[in-house]
Image 1 (tube, rainbow, N blue to C red):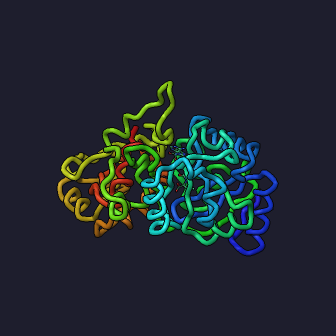
Image 2: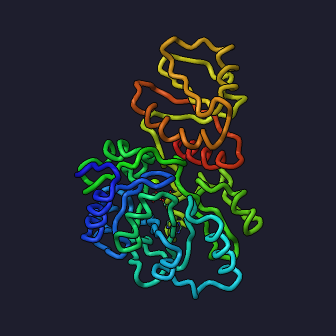
Image 3: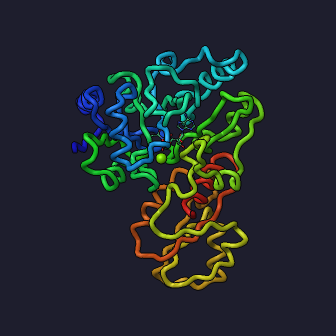
Length: 342
Ligand code: TXA
Ligand code: MG
C-alpha cells in the first residue's frame, strides 16, 4: 500500500492503478471512498472482498463531468417530467453530496448495482476526486472506504487503520469537508424518495423539485433485508456502528441520564451538556463530548464520525448520544446515530 499526499504525481499514479484494475482510496467532500474502475467487473469485485461487503449492497458510481451521465445510464428510460427534475437537480446541486438513482446501461456491470436495473450516480465536489476520476476512465465506483458496517472514514488515517494494506493507494487529502455520506435520492419511480438522508438536506431538494416523501427515522431503521431485495440495501439497521454499545436519547432524556463509571456522553450542543452537568456528578475522568457548542447542525455533522472514531478508541462501556434537531443535516445525523445504536 502507498500512502500519498495529494499531488499531480500522486494523482497520476492513482489513476494508473485504477485503469489497471487496482483500488484507490480517495477524499471526497463527504467521506473517503474506496474506488475502482466502474467499467471493470474484476476491480469491482475487489471492493466487495476488501470491505467484506455483501454482494446485495450496490455501489455509487462517481463521475466528474455531467456529460459522463450518458456513458453510465440509460436516460431514455425516464419520462419527460423525471428528466426535467433530473436536469434541475444536476444543474443546482452537482457537484455535491447528492447521489441519484437512475436506470443503468450495459456498460455498468451488475456487480456494481447488485443486480439492480438502476445505478447510483454522484458528482463529488472535491478537486482531488474530480481530477482522479477525469484522469482514469471517467467513472469510479466507490463505497465509503471502511470495513462493512464500521464508521465511515473522514480522514485518510481512518482508511489506513480500517483497510490498510488491502488498498493499493491511499490518497491523503485532509479532512472531508462535510463528514457525512451523500443523500441518496430515487427519482425514477412515481414517488420520489430519499433512500438515505445525507449531506444534501431534504429542504434543498424540495426547493428545487417540490415536496418529496422520505423515510422517517422509524421507517428507515426497520427496513430489512427481504427475499425480494432491498430498495436501498445500505439502509441496514446495524450500520456505521462503533464497537461500543450506543444509546440515542432526546434532550429531555439525556439530561436525566445518570453518570456511571465507564459511560461516555456525546451531546449535540453545549447547552444540553451544561444542564446535565448541573444535576449529574461525573468523575473528572469522564468522557463528555459535544458535537457543536452552539448547536449548529452543519458543524455537528462534520464532527460526528470523527468523534465516534475517537470514542471507539477509548476504554468505555457505553455511549449515550443526544439526537440532533430533525432539520437540515440534523436528519442525516440522527439517521447515523440510530443506525449506530442498533
Ligand atoms: O458520500 C457518499 O455517498 C460516499 C462517498 C465515497 O461518495 N459513498 C458511500 O457509498 O457512502 P456506500 O457504498 O457506503 O453507500 C451507498 C449507498 C448504499 O446505501 C446503497 O444501498 C445505495 O447507496 N445505493 C447504491 N446503488 C443503489 C441503487 N441502485 N438503488 C438503491 N440504492 C442504491
Ligand atoms: Mg458506507
